[in-house]
Amino acid sequence: MADARFQPGRPESRWVALLVRAGVFLGLWFVLGNLFVQIGALVVIASGEPTGTMSTSAAFRTWNWASWALGALLSAWSYRRLIRTAGD
Image (cartoon, rainbow, N blue to C red; front, side, top):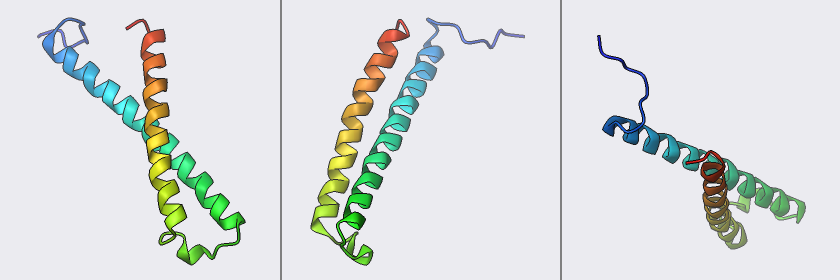
């Protein structure tokens, strides 16, 4: 029976490593993007704007897109640091 352990240098292990890295990046992006969206929602609620109009508010839509962009930038930065400290 063949040895099925992860072996660096094998072609399939490169794909596994790529998928793991993509998963880490997307996970970071999802968490950070959602965090900033929630902060924006709290700011909109605290400002006294009716919550029923939050999804149609131009300010909230702008913050929503900016939050995901900021989350992507911070995820990329965190990901690079994570990979660099892992010695890869």
